Image (cartoon, rainbow, N blue to C red; front, side, top):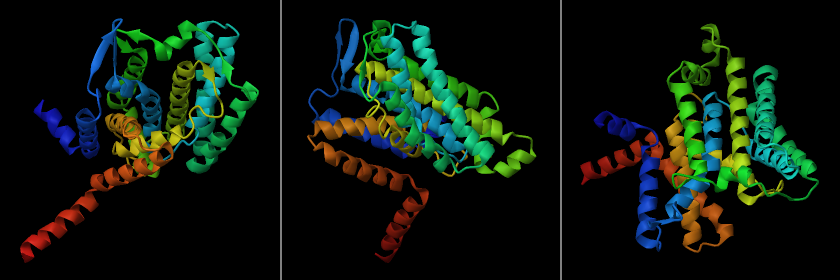
Length: 335
C-alpha cells in the first residue's frame, strides 16, 4: 500500500489528482445535494454517478489518444469518427438489423479509418496533425451524407442498453470503460507492447535499429484510436437515440487530447500514463458540471475551462514549480 501511495505522489498526474479532489470537495461543500447518492429502482443516482457516466466517452477516446500521443503522434479525427459510427449504427438500428451487426459494423468502419490514419502517418510519412486533419474534415461530411443531412432517430431497447442500461446498480457504460482500460493496461504493462510504444515515442530511429517495427506499432495505435472513437460514438448515439452528424462528438478530440496531457503524458511522446488520462477526463467532466452548477453562462464555460487547464498545466510543470520555490527561497534568505 505504501508503495502504491508513494508511486501516486511521485507520478506526473499527482497535481491533477489533487485538483480533482479539491474540485469535488468544493462541490460537496457549496453545491446542493452534490454528494448525495440515491438508490431508485435498484439503480444508483446522483451528481457524482452522473459525472462518471458522462465521462465514459472521453475516457474511451483518451485511452486511444494516450497511445497515439505516446508514439509522438496525434489523432484529430476521433470526433468525426464518432459521427461516422453514430450514422452507421443509427441507420442499421432503424432498419432492424441484428444487434451484432449494428454494433460491430460501425466499429469495423472506424477501425478501418484508424488504419487509414496510421497508413498516412507511418507509410506515407505525412505529419500526424495533417494526416488526421484530413479525416477530421471529411469524416463529418461522410456522416452527414450517410444521414442525408437529417437526424436519424431509432428505438432499439437492446442497443440503447449501451448508455441506458445498468448492471448491479451502476451504468453499463462504466463497465465498458473499465473493461477497455483493463485490456489496454494488460496489453501495455504485462506485455512488451507498452515498451515498444514508448520506445518509438522517445527515439524512433534507435527503436528501428533494435528491431521494433515503427510502421506496425503506429498502424496498431491509430487503429485502436479509431476503435475507441467507434465505441464512444455508439455510447453517445444510444444516449440521444439518434444520429446527429452535425453535433455529436464535436470538439471531443480536444477533450481527449486535454485529458491525456493533464494526465502527465507529454505531447512529444514517450512515457504514457493511462490512469492519468482517466483523471484528466474526470477533471474535464467535473469542471463542466461545476461551471454549469454555478450558473456560469454557457459561452463563458470554455474560457473558464481554459483558465483552469492553464493553471493545472503550470502547477504540473517541474520547471515552473522550481522557479516559484527558488524565488521564495531567495526572498527568505534576503529577509
